Image 1 (cartoon, rainbow, N blue to C red):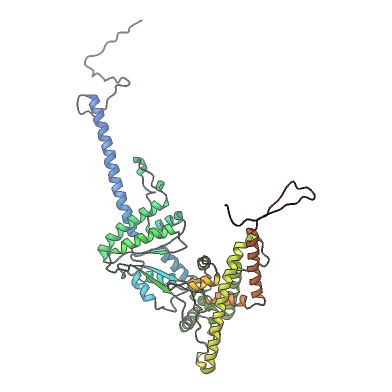
Image 2: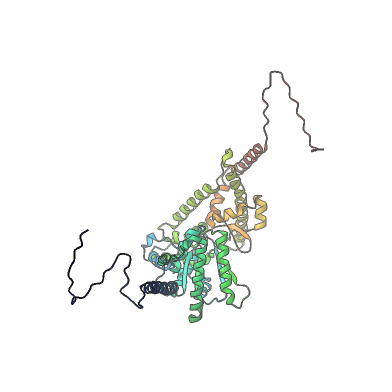
Length: 481
């Protein structure tokens, strides 16, 4: 091996040599490189830990700030949609307007939305199209949605999770960067736990703003056939949030009904005047209301039309077709649709009773007209039957809830059952008064009984029998000895 000798100038500085695997940091604290490396690692981990804790505290504060911003006055998704609908062309409008009529319940709704109903939570009950949503939107618009948020409930927890997050401006920790610190994914718990987390955040914001403003936050949940678990979860929260009030009955139910005949006439005239339609005479208005009743949604549609009476008849034909598509009778039906026809036949038993009661009401009014003509267009309310009596008429107790969910009947807080609207009653009246309806209903019910009897029949098959063989059967009803 040859060794090359080189001369090194002693006056030149000696450059340190880094052998692989033995390099040390240029940041030296002590003369021990191993201790310096360990101390540097600890300092780096400490900075990461402090940064993570600081980021997480900032993120939680920012989440509460964003939820608080959702209740601040100004932009609200539901309010913005309502404003857009008001700016549409009058011919395109379909939602009932409250500019032409201020209902007596509006003052109560205003007090609730404005935060003057401390210590209670409210359940608003009414038929579809009676103006519940319109009154709520009007009350929100009066205060620019200050301290108010609205959320539509849904039976699917995943859908409701998204809707609640949109209403509260809450991202369910999906926009966080805590995955860098190996934190658990917040979605692992499922939508139910996400909803609980959102309600926990909402509770913190509500307590803070309640101390600042002296009035509660208002969160509106629209019921869209929500699941029992979801309703239980929300009601438990409502009970706990309302405990600060001094009233013992924390839940209060408000029922909305159709307009009276005088209110309906007033709303019809005001709406046509606002839209610039030519006025119609009193007889035409009364004929229209004989079809639509006091339902604000139907009054809105007919008042916008150039031919209100024709529009009312068209609505009646549409509702009649829809009613028959839901509970129409099928003669000589097959056993595949037996359950459906059982529901339909029992439903028509109830609808026929409603028609019978309404005709009796009309006869009573006719007798009054013979005495005093001032009651010529007096109001005839929708016929009402107690809930227990409806169970007896239908012979099935479980069908009433399905009819209520289908908006064919309505059940109020006093357990009284009535048709959902005058349009539904008029459509049922036309069907019931058709020739041969009673025979059709009896035949369908008889057919259902036959199919059920066939399902209860057992067939015995004997094999390997020759010609002339005899079989003797005996029935013993005494049971085993």
